[in-house]
Every structure is written in structure tokens, then in C-alpha cells.
Image 1 (cartoon, rainbow, N blue to C red):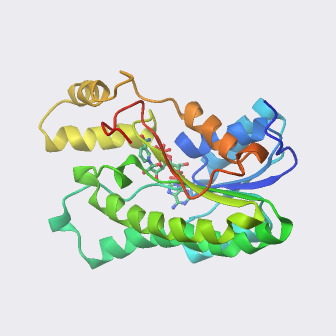
Image 2: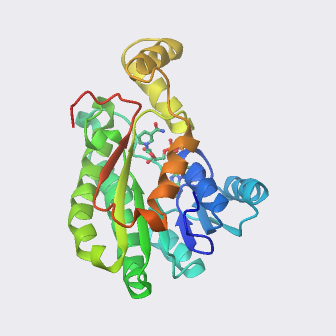
Length: 259
Ligand code: NAP
């Protein structure tokens, strides 16, 4: 299927590894021009080269922190008129809510709620004027079913989810969509470090914890980042203009509810 987005411009956050890199690659294969962002220069430049080689697309890497005002300003200076915005970065640290002080909470809210909201605020009016926009926020299955050690993530992302529910409906008539993709268990660096943190809390080995987590997924495996990347590219397609304000769970059937 031709997704009808060749020549469109996209900003993809957290794109040197894991889910963000997979989204970037899937968009690049559709002929989208990319500005990709992560904090570590060497890694984002290597990712850009890898994506260029695999797709032939124009890819501009930027070393910046998407959670800071300066970082977001640098991204928008490089790509002021994106047609597609993939809001993605790292998640907040794991832990116990008794240990989190105000600074920890503010940092989580800034990174995982306000950062994506400000990126939307700064790009959505251009999309409205051009009558095409696709915004995808990579959030977490924790928005639907909280994960114990991820209280900061559960909470900050719920705030973003509430914002999107309102804002998406305000801009939908201009062919601008805003959706959240909720990953379950995808085999990435962050997933591995979360598994290690869970193993420590439960006094298990990493391999034991991995087996337990995999057994909880109906599909019997973790997701591959490319599966999420291709789904994200579809959400950014011309054809996906009628899908908006949704929370789309990709979890291999782990969530047990009927809806
Ligand atoms: P990952 O493998 O750790 O990759 C994170 C990427 O984001 C890296 O490129 C990292 O590079 C970049 N990054 C981190 N903080 C950043 C920042 N402040 N500004 C710009 N770039 C930043 O993580 P992932 O598993 O792909 O997860 C992506 C998102 O999905 C996270 O928010 C995570 O919480 C969420 N999620 C993942 C899963 C899963 O199963 N993997 C499940 C639920 C939710 P630098 O460190 O160099 O910046």
C-alpha cells in the first residue's frame, strides 16, 4: 500500500534506538524527509546513516533533549514546518512513589506531558494551515493498566492523554489527526532495563523476570520495534485521516479486557 506521504516532512523524537528509530525507518521507507532527534550525538548520527542507507530518504540528525525548552527550539529551528510529528523520548525512572520528591514529579511531568504538549502547540497551526497533519505520541500501555514501578510514567502520560482527547477533536476538521500509540512489551533497551529493575524488586534473575513477562503476553513473545514503526507510519498516512483522538494499544493481547 502506498501511504501517500512521500515528500512530507517529519520530526521523530527519541530516534537513535528502539521504538523511535523504528518509526523513523518506517516513515523513511515511505519517502518521508526526516529530522531525527536524540541526546547522544554519535548515536543519532549513526541512526541517520543507517536509515539513509536502508531507505534513500533525506535524514537530518540532531543531538538535542526533547524534554528541554532549548532542545525543542533547536528541533523546530531545523524543521519549522513538519507535516508529521512523532513525540517520543525516554520514559521517567522506575521506583516507589514514597521515594519521589517534587523535583522527580516535575521532571516526569515536564518530560512526558508538557514536552509533547509544547511540540504539538508549536506545530499544529502550521499543519492546520497546510490542511494536513499527523501527530503520534508514543505513550505506554501503563496509561490503560498502570505498572507498579512506573508510577511517574503512569501519571504524567495520563495527563498527556487527557490533553490529546480534547485537542485532537479541536483540530480534526482540518485533516490534522492526533493519536497516542500505547506500546506493551517491545524488545528495546528500555524494556530490558525495566525488566532488570523489576527483577531486582522481586529478587529474581533477569532471565526469570524476562520469562515471566513474556508469559504474560498472549502472543507469547515481545513485540519487535518494526511492528510498531510500521503501524505508526500507517497512522501518519493519507488513508488514516479518519482515525483521531485514539489510544491504540499494541501489546500482543496482554491487556485482558474485552474493550
Ligand atoms: P529506548 O530503547 O531506551 O530508546 C529511547 C530513545 O530515546 C533513544 O534514542 C534515546 O537516545 C532517546 N531519548 C531519551 N530521552 C530523550 C530526550 N530527553 N530527548 C531526546 N531523545 C531522548 O526506549 P524505547 O523502548 O524505544 O521507548 C520509547 C518510549 O516508549 C519511552 O517513552 C518508553 O517509556 C515508552 N514505552 C516503551 C515500551 C517498550 O516495551 N519498549 C513500553 C511502554 C512504553 P538518547 O538517550 O541518546 O537521548
